Length: 451
Image (cartoon, rainbow, N blue to C red; front, side, top):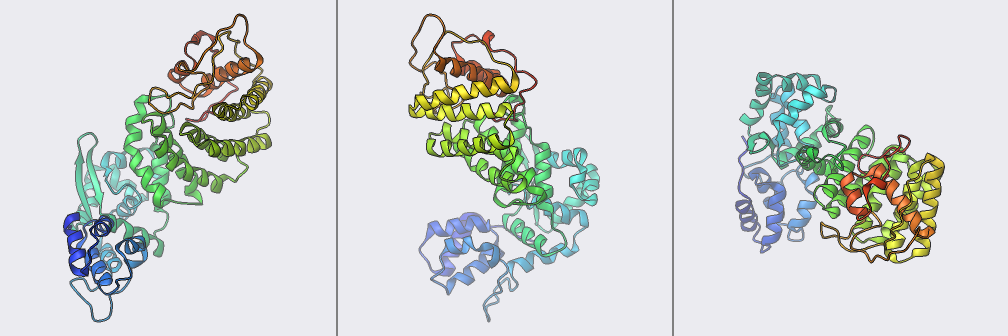
């Protein structure tokens, strides 16, 4: 049975045994050890005679230190390694229980709701082992799979006021399980975890607020997989999609572009690994990331990334409407910089490309407006469009010049093709939405990107 100390007790124990005066470092290591006395005992014994190794260094190397033997002559209360102590108990567990622990080790350490597991067994049993799929599908078999792990304190049960029952796997147990899977004949659960979250994560977070509850539920699992999920092979594509949609949820639903970038950057690398640097999927991921760079004012990175997108699009999508959107996105970066001549040229290329690829343009509007860099309703600078009500506006009689004609035409086509109507209305106000023609069937939109 595994006991658990509070973080405060763990930190005090580390300081007392090692004789150190680094409470912040002790608290940080206590969080990594997650209050497990077994792990704390080994850490304190190791660090006591090694003053050159800090708490932070030990925490950073925890993956290999959990398998390190004690120093000769020092047995203590836990003579075996953390790894050996925890994995020894797995031999006595039923197959479905071991598979359940393996799956949970890749998901959020803050708990996995049992309803999610039940849904996965019902909708996507192909992503589970036969034993685990059968156990999760039946409430009696599910309890029989969970009980042996809770009896050994390898697993705990909790409750969420909104989502019901939770299964909680100790962080150190999860770490050891991930290491154990790589050393035994049970690899592949990282891929299964990514496939399950991918299958359940909604892809329409930008247009359907009703799905935000599900996205919020799956976000902690996306973050856990971002840290230690599959980096290549069959799981990379699934995980890349998960991180892409999780980033979209953070941006659209929470207005947290910085956190979205933290997920989009690894998502782009996964797309490159899975599909190559000249793929449309990789270009779409870059486009989403560059849009967030624009929203957060990181214009140098946005410009360089959009140029990469255009280089790929011109090679693999020369006749696709996405290329027009790529020109438009780079144009608004130049607009934010005040480089209007460059912006005008790109807006005109965007209009020409869209006309050639879709044979469709929206009507010209005779209400010109300046590009605004004022903050939108969320308080951050908007990057979703070029026309904003907060910008300085000048009225003219008749049609606008070619620059603003391109701006308005491209904004209309971009928003009606890819963004939800609420964003289109906000970005194009005070232009009446009656001027925005329905998106043609030849202009597909990515799940949450502006492409």
